[in-house]
Amino acid sequence: MEYFDEEILKARKKAEDAEKARYSAQTVAQEKKQSIYDKFVEIFKVPTKFEEKAVLHNKARIYMPTDFETRPEEEIKLMFPFGNPPQELYGNSYATFILAFHWTEHQMTQENIPTFMAFAKQMMERMGPKAHVIKSDIKKRDTGDIGVMEVVANALQGVSYSYHFYTIMEGHLIIGTVMFDKKYKDRLLPIADEIVESFHAVKINY
Image (cartoon, rainbow, N blue to C red):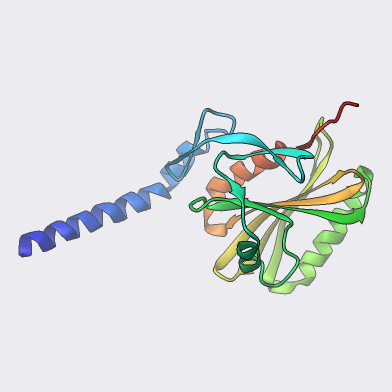
C-alpha cells in the first residue's frame, strides 16, 4: 500500500512540475520568439495554428486559432453579465484568451478615431479602481490607422487584461477586443498585438 501511495505522490509531483514549467519565464521567453504566421505557435506549450477567418458578417478578416468558433449567446451572457455584450465572440474550450467584436451604430470617420480614443480613455478612468488604462495609441497601417487601448480591470474571476482596438468600417465604429487574464500578459500581449494588426476590411470589387 505504501508503494502505491509513494507512486501516486511522485506522479502528482511530476504533474505539478510540468504545469509550472508551462507558465515559467523560460517557457514564455522561448515562445515569444514565435509568430502567429508561423506553421504553428506554442502558447504555454500548447501547439496552436492560426489562420485568417471571416468576421462581422464576412465583411472583415482577422487571424485567430483555427479551432476558434463563435460562442453561443448563453455563454456570452455569462461572460458579460453587466450588459453591453459583444455581437460576436470567438474562442474554444481551452484557450487562455478570447476575441470579441462590437460593430456599433456610431457613425464616424477614420480621422475621428484619435478624438474618440481620448473620450474612451476618460470614460475608462472614470470607472475608478475597477478599470485602469495602461496604454492608448494610434497604429499607422497601410490598411488604415487603428486605435488601440490596453485596459486592466477587476473581473469576476481575477483581473482581466483587455487589448481593445478601434477602427471604421462602412462609416461605423468597430470595437474589437482580445481579452485574457492579467497573469498571462507577458505571453499573450505579443499574440494580441499580431492578431489586432491582422484585422482588415474585405475589399469588394464591383
